[in-house]
Image (cartoon, rainbow, N blue to C red; front, top):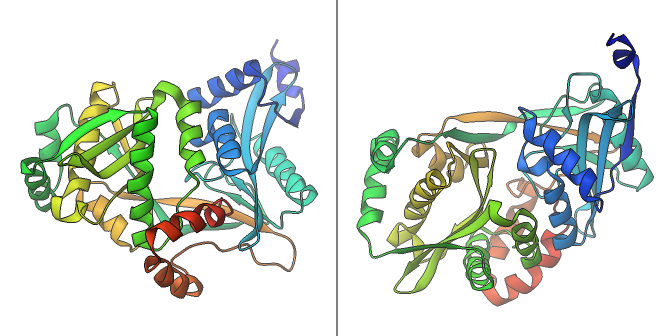
Length: 357
């Protein structure tokens, strides 16, 4: 009886993200898929497009007229500094082809490459997802992801953290720090000030403020901002997404004062408690470049690194674009950016970073 369904060919088309019914249908597919991430959601694609001025494309694979079997969110990124690329998912650490079985993988990969060629993007990047097949370069050595289950309460969480980091958390808890959680305009402004200083100190340009605003708008009650204050002054802050029982602390950082106050330690420990109160059972610390201080920091919290596999395809005879800030060719630029006055870095940063994707 099911044979006619199985024999139907798979068709790929671009979804209409202005259609609430289409968005809901895609969202349900992503929610129910074991490998789905917030970066596969239409909300992410729309927020990135509005917040960074880049065009969103969302490919869906259907078997027949009523069965969704695969998705591929894509962001068309244009930059005078970094070139053009089609990225899945733009400004995310995850994405790539999400398929119900293997049948939709090849059609989606082929459609993605045809789209890249049609919009004059010489590189197509897939940050995770199913292996798209031959002709793609796979990289499983550059980045690692860090995620683990949350402990049932604060005391158990402390015990789950290795001894050295546990001592740092206890020192942070003893400091005069205040925690607040919200998502209003004042919270967003405070977060942006802290985050902008944090990334300038790391030598990277800050994203446009509109990106954060649009993510908060699109995700609604599934996103918020946790702020750590010392003497009423914000010193650390993180914007997080809550999805499918997992908290994703995505954009976080601290000011120069945060280090001595151990405000970042307090921030993430408080976020774990807040996530538990929201019903989350898992903490996704995001990705870090292998061998970096950020990766070591997450390992110190008891997170085991898991390799992330990314895929790239470039036009014949061309190398895929390279935007890794740790690349030797960017070393001088990073060092120079760290010395920029904060006001200047905040004016130039969004113009540069919107082309990173």
